[in-house]
Image 1 (cartoon, rainbow, N blue to C red):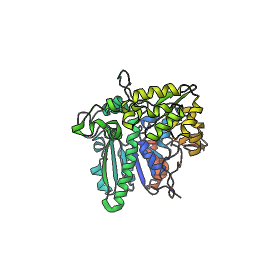
Image 2 (cartoon, rainbow, N blue to C red):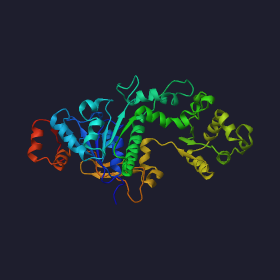
Image 3 (cartoon, rainbow, N blue to C red):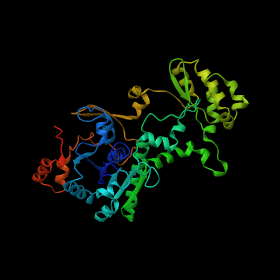
Image 4 (cartoon, one colour):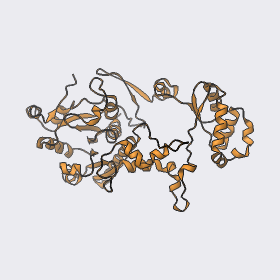
Length: 398
């Protein structure tokens, strides 16, 4: 069996995370993804120390792809890219708006040679507005999207950022979904189309459902920070931190029983879901005091027995041995001659008939250049000429 996107060919001209991770998701689902890079490699290749030629962040955003390192400023490099695009289904790029037009690879040009092409443009801020031509990294999107307000210190109000590149990754998920939808629409005879996706729009949409509740109804606007379920449901047991939360009446009663505090069931402050929200600080303080009296394993067992959502707070090293992670096979352990054992998160969506899978490791720079060029009709002599003129770079994996 093969992935749901078997037969789809994607040209990935993106760099860093917002585009590469999205293209990788599509590769996991069976698409052939050719990563087109500058002769020196895209920026993410140089963001951390390499291990046998590839660093971990690059690996985890580019597994399953082929790499073509070519000089797109040269006429020969442009010719190669045009030939690839003619027989491809998807073209992905995340340059600033207008850049690919100046390079000769804008949508209006490419649709002339491939009317069925799905063309995805990822930008930081969109094509209009004061930031449209600004350089972008994840913290800038966090700043403009309200992320730092959502993460703000609960006591001082000091803005805080997510300690991961959340904007890039949310954008990559949105990109993969958008490309899949466009491919489906094309199958219904809509033809190719241009998808414009900004990191800012992706993150605002991601935060909106519960992060922006006070902004939904104009005539009922309120400061989200005053009502937001903003308390970190983290409690310290005797030996480690845990989380536990009770939303429904049944869960709240179960928590009270687990804590041997049945008296709280009748407490008017906490008798209803609305009361538990309006008195959330008091409720959390009482809950925290009670949990601190227990060892984590014992109180978690009691909470689980009562149907209360709860779990220990794992550090990242603990993931590898956690029973639930192991039962789910959430982390794959793959063995390659070059790298030894490589751990990767399993593709999350599990298709029964067309399963996703990690087909190959991340490529070395230009590793597949010869193979790719020969498939579009280039002779060994012509490839050697491109190499000697430094318009093509190939790494021999051996």
